[in-house]
Amino acid sequence: MDLGGKNVVYLGGFGGIGKKCVQELLKKQIKGLAIFDLIVDDDLLAEWKKLNPDTEVFYQKVDITQKSDIDAAYKATAEKLGHFDVVVNGSGLLDDRLIELTIQINLVGVINSTLTALEYMDKSKGGKGGLIVNISSVAGLQPTPLMAIYSTSKTGVTTFTRAMASPIHYAHSGVGFITICPGYTNTGILKDIDKKTTFPFYETRMRTVFSKVKGQTVEVCAQNIVHAIETAKNGAVLMLELGEIHELDIPNLWNPQLDDCVFVCLS
Image 1 (tube, one colour):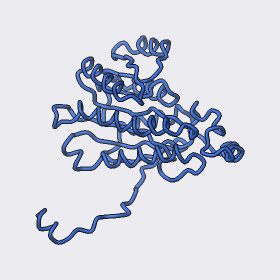
Image 2 (cartoon, rainbow, N blue to C red):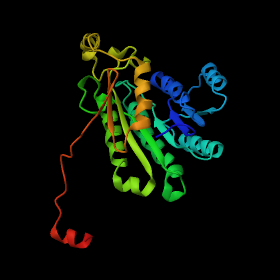
Image 3 (cartoon, rainbow, N blue to C red):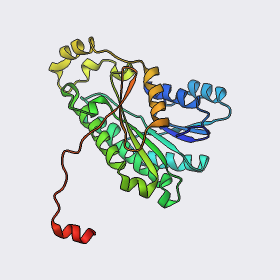
Image 4 (cartoon, one colour):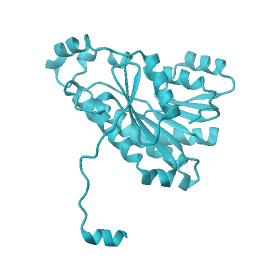
């Protein structure tokens, strides 16, 4: 996708990865940018507006755990921009001691945002199609025992996004989906991570493990997310690890066994 002249909605645009992604997106001469977040960084927002006078940049306050906030933000954005071409669901929380909030932000919020955005983007409903990008994690690709709740929420994001990328859905709506799974990235979400494990007895182990894990910078991660938006195909699951993009081939482990009568009915 050529991002030039496109309208973008970014959820979590003032977060660690989010800020850098917004900066990368603004380099692409996008037409409009709506930033959905709970707390606004007024100075940064003013800077983005000043440095990008040809892009309409604005903020919508959104508590991702409140569907009413999501609905209102998309409605206001549609009225302001007319339509949007790209949505990035980038809000996230890593703290397994906050079980319900982790699931609400990381999974339920992503689902609600996605389904609300589709109401405006779906070609069958008068939209123009586009792309929805959901930020998962490498913890959403396999079980992560130290952070079981976070891993569960991100696995849900991966599975949900892959399901939404079904060719049947795409043919109907014209909206593509890609899943982004960053590896260890140096952001604020990792602050005091040893206090955010599923069980307290993991704290010492967590400090030991993460002191040895190689990480990538936020800047490199953001650059690769934007590159993925420009180049990835519908259904792609991309692992962003140590500055590299790896497209993953996730196999189907089960296919339904159909009775002969089903084939007759479908033929």
